[in-house]
Image (cartoon, rainbow, N blue to C red; front, side, top):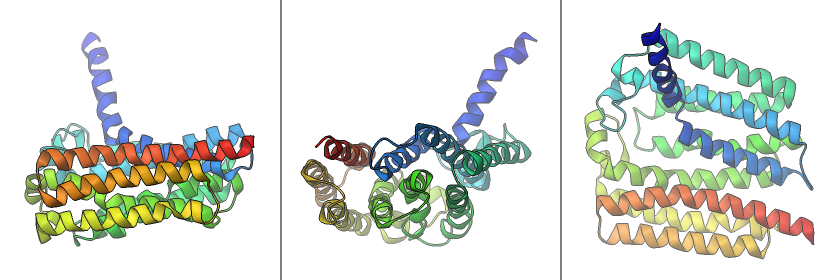
Length: 297
């Protein structure tokens, strides 16, 4: 009995790791920002709570399926070799059961606690990531993260739909920002984990086209990202506070990308990757702060 009790937390932790909690948190954070931006004032907090829970559950389910599909690839990579699916300590049946429970619960919560539109959009995002990206795109094309990035960019639209029961142009601009942000964010990781991806057999851009080509594309995308982040101000969705933050954050992103392009090092690639996560959080936080400042006027 004592042995079983001691092993239970370890098993629960293994299940938790399969849901990629850090990635899920960032996705859900962007969805919550979408919820608050969708309302002219304070949104319905019960919808915010149910929407957050439902989106979180379906995102976790998608990541669990991703780990199951990629278990052989993960076993060849140092970064992912410790996952329970890669080590075989959790069976395929257990992962499918976990994903089914999380995904089914998420769909139930979104349908009855929020609205059918949010449920179907979130389910489509689940299919886009777990099936179209993981099964079709990722093992076949170096543009996998570009094309498949749409599913990862959807959280703001899901959050907006949860409150407004619609997805207007403003929500799609937020989706576009994450869509443009995703390739340089992920390619920075792929650069300093290049040996892992060579072992994995996945056609990531640094593997198929080389380091220099990838660094150039990171730099080009950083300029495109800055231009895209100005759109909320251009359409008067946000004000001067957001504009200032977008310019400063975008300038810092370009600075890191330029340094990486001029003289590569794994340390710089890692800095850019880590900064890109902070960048997105601060950018969306600035959108919300600007929105609230506007309401107080």
